[in-house]
Structure formats: structure tokens, C-alpha cells
Image 1 (cartoon, rainbow, N blue to C red):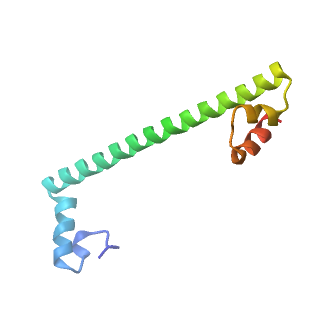
Image 2 (image 1 turned 120 degrees about the vertical axis):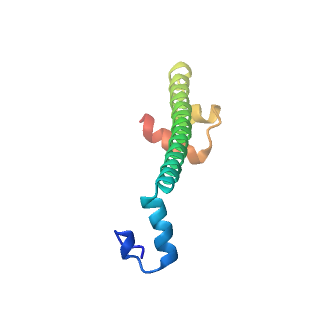
Length: 101
């Protein structure tokens, strides 16, 4: 039944009636359209939240890079010394070393 492209080809009557309602009945079509609109809106909202979070993370990363570079230049420190002064966790340091060098 799930592979049928036409409602009339479906074997189980209960499933056939439900599918007919949502595919052919005006009320069912409206409900289905509303449901898809709600799902789409939730997807958009989720995408916005994820985009904002990624943007914030990128902003933090760029600020850290600028801070590291400023300390290296103004204090004549190595990248390791600058990251230590900024208290950048050891597990994140390799990323910044790779990015700056």
C-alpha cells in the first residue's frame, strides 16, 4: 500500500480511506497543506537558530584569533604564550596554531 501511486490501488480499506481523504478530499488537502506549512516553518526556525549559533561561534573564533595575533605582536610572545594568557583550552589550541600559521 505504501508504494501505491494511486489511492484506488491500495489493498487495506482503512489506509485507502485515510489516504483518499488527505489526497482527494478538500478538507484533507487543506489539513495536509497546513501540516506541511507548519513543518516548513519549524524547519526555517531551526535553520535560523543553527545559523545564528554558527555565526556566534565563528565570531568568537575570529575574536580569539585577533587576540592571539595582537598579543603575539604587541608582547612579542609566541603563539603558545598568547594562548596560555588567553586561557584557551589545550584541546582547542591545535586549531588556532593551524589557522594562524
